[in-house]
Length: 342
Ligand SMILES: Nc1ncnc2c1ncn2[C@@H]1O[C@H](COP(=O)(O)OP(=O)(O)OC[C@H]2O[C@@H]([n+]3cccc(C(=O)O)c3)[C@H](O)[C@@H]2O)[C@@H](O)[C@H]1O
Ligand SMILES: Nc1ncnc2c1ncn2[C@@H]1O[C@H](COP(=O)(O)OP(=O)(O)OP(=O)(O)O)[C@@H](O)[C@H]1O
Image (tube, rainbow, N blue to C red):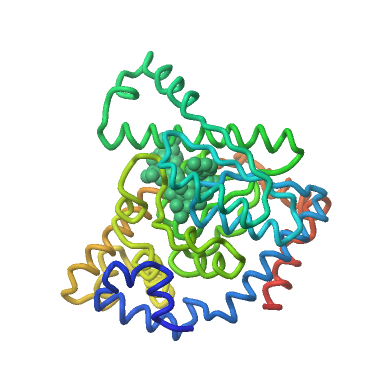
């Protein structure tokens, strides 16, 4: 795998390359196998496809619906389902969208051989914003970041209402398109972005997502596109997150490495443990990453569950499902076995 390939696919090269600490760290992480080589990524792709195919036959469900935004995550997710033999139905659901994004979504449906529906949800969105205005004038009236974020989340949730309705109509499931970088950043909307099966949730956005997308036939225009939430909140994902996806992924891996070396490490001790010295840019990005992780931990365990005070009810139902009902591809033993195979 080439270092320059990672820089190109992550779009970091176009942004002027990496600052010194990130550059050195990326090279070390490539050597340590944290950034997977292309042969390993091909195995990852095959395993995900196999799991999706097994789930399809074992769970007795073969149709997936998903929103096609014109971005790489949805196109890759659709392609993986399709390769695993699913019927895949892509929905372009613009809400005051830049038409270029919608066109890319349509093009990806065509290139990947998906069935396609188009439904402009702008009127429904406007009605909802106006309706909320009856209890809260900020919703239609304010243009500050909190109001824009709330309206953005509303857009994501309106799409999800639509997709769940259509999944029911077709007797299928909603494919989830979220990735590992977004998971860490809390960069998705609760009850807006997360569907039923999430095949790319473990993959990093800077490298694994675009690499796999290119491999499985997602149009180049899409895997090269600037990542954007398309929710009208800010100027693209990276501007909103405060780091490029490559910087984000390197930093998250570095924090995990530091924790592995010293499980007692504190947030205050991280910059020194990571040898950031006087590199202000690296320290600033580390601060951004830590702040986002801290602000969003709860989203990653949503809903926060409080067990029965006198009995372990969740373990009880989990053991029952695992022993009697869960499709074999998801059972712990099978997953562990499958893990060893690759
Ligand atoms: N301590 C706590 N414990 C448990 N739950 C807590 C909580 N604090 C807040 N919450 C809950 O969390 C909610 C906030 O989370 P949420 O509603 O998700 O909203 P939010 O945190 O605003 O997350 C959405 C962010 O993701 C971005 N996004 C959205 C959609 C797609 C994409 C994309 O690019 O793919 C990105 C969007 O730009 C925005 O920055 C609160 O309203 C509250 O209900
Ligand atoms: N206009 C849209 N039409 C249909 N679905 C959409 C639309 N916008 C967003 N979505 C759905 O919400 C998910 C998250 O949105 P997001 O904008 O992050 O797209 P993406 O596919 O992740 O691409 P990227 O982040 O690279 O732009 C998408 O994957 C898609 O399933």
